[in-house]
Amino acid sequence: MILPIRTNIRPWRTPYANYALITINAVIFVLSYSPQYNASGQLISVLRPWADNYFKLKPLEPHLWQFITYAFLHGGFLHIIFNMYFLYLFGNNVNDKLGHVSYVFFYLAGAILSAAGHIAFTKWFDPNSFGIPLIGASGAVAAVTGAYLVLYPQTLITIIYWFFFIGTIELPALYFIALKMILIDNIITADRSSNVAYHAHLAGYAFGIFSILLLLSTGIISGTGLDLWAMVKQWNRRRRYRDVVAGGYNPYAGTGSKKVRSKQVEKSSLSEEQEEKNKQLRTEIADRIAQRNLPAAAQAYLDLIDIDYNQIIPRQYLLDVANQLASEARYTAAANAYEQFLTHYKNYEHAEQVQLMLGIIYARYLHNQEKAIKNLEEAKKKLVSPEQIRMADEELKKLQN
Image (cartoon, rainbow, N blue to C red; front, side):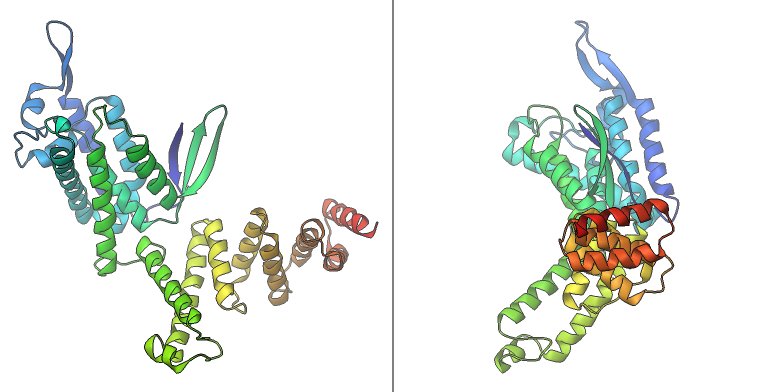
């Protein structure tokens, strides 16, 4: 079992609209929930008669208002608890991005479109399920979750898991939502014999993803450089760049056939594109470190120096990135980052600790004895911690034996 428990970003503004929607759902649940049994003791309805007769969505005889009212009815405590939990988890930041009024309209549109998608799919592809009434906020919540995926794909979601033991891990929102919540939960392991409206979920996700992508691509809502639309544009730039280079054009030396340059891209425009790319990556590094998404920051740094090795980022950013690369066992990249740090920030007050780390990497993982001894000996001259001095001595002793 796994359950997301938090994200690594918080809204700048209080998400009053999301809190209001959660409260309204809870109040209507209390007012409408009342299991009904027949004379034989069989459960025939979970709603009070007024809600069951007029407000749940009946595909065989739908009324327009039911495409909204159904989303505020729930079939039990677990049903509403899980829906409101995920609405709180992902909706707060979407509310912050869209604003209160737009967020409420988006939520209601998600409820309407997910219901319409469910009815259309069951009518044409699953007629045995077509007449089953629909209740629950799952489709609207799926739309909000899809919006979160587009707006914040690179944020980290903390997951608690329990199998034989309990623990937590952090996963990027893009992978957790797209793979776990959409693909696995609603397609691969979906139990079609149950009363769960998987088609409504999928329609909600589709609406949330594509509507927000449309809004970002048209500039109706502003992008951050870290959203899914920015990732798509970045991928497209890389694809164009690879195509140009594969065609024989060297953007740095200006070599290659005139035919390639004239048909695909001029040297000057490609240089501007390169500068824009560098700027975006530097902004991305800063934003991801601010979010404490260090794995993503480290990858953005590697992308940056892959384009221009001489690019330098601020001191603390570079140190954080180097430490992250070391923790990921990407030792060659970590050593290069530490070397760059010591070259450009040699007056750093704790430079000897960076040299100690660099010496250990060269000694234990990269097997470069010369550089290991050089860094360890220089670090030892300035170290004051007995534990760190002992560590340097032990590594030097191993190298010199």
